Image 1 (cartoon, helix red, strand yellow):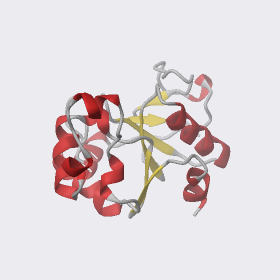
Image 2 (cartoon, rainbow, N blue to C red):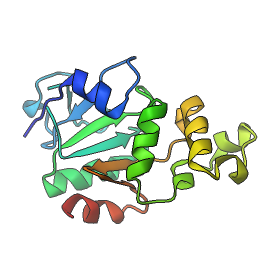
Image 3 (cartoon, helix red, strand yellow):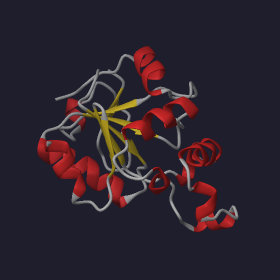
Amino acid sequence: MSLSIDTEWAMGTIGLRPSSPPIAHSVRGDTAACHSTAQHSSNRCDTVSGMAAVTVFHNPRCSTSKAALDAADAAGVEVEVVRYLTTPLDEAALRNLLSKLEDPATDLVRRDAAFARLGLTNADVATADQVVAVLVEHPELMQRPVLVKGKRAIIGRPKDRVPVFLTD
């Protein structure tokens, strides 16, 4: 099962910065199903070819993010994978995402070593406007994975939230 993306639609609808196209994910997980030879680190193939039921904002170096893609594979759910570090969300896209997010806006910001190195505190990301401002400047601080389905979005942590969201 592979999918395709109307890149122009995706760019306008989810507000991706035009630096690179969104990446779709073949839920079969085998390279034989690909329309492209590009692969990401977990050996799933990436194609730019349709629309999916779920969008996953993904970091291929994150085990929790990889687990979300595995859960989609297991559930047979087609996903569009957006590598948000390669294709960061702009302000409008972040606001759109926050409007769908079932978690508190502040939870979208990772509190990790980069957060501390930047001198940020919880007070700096207490409101939706602050979260947007920080993530526009520092997309590496966006929590992952983030899953979007229709008018709903969740942060896929803990991992057991993902299968429930995918099958809702």
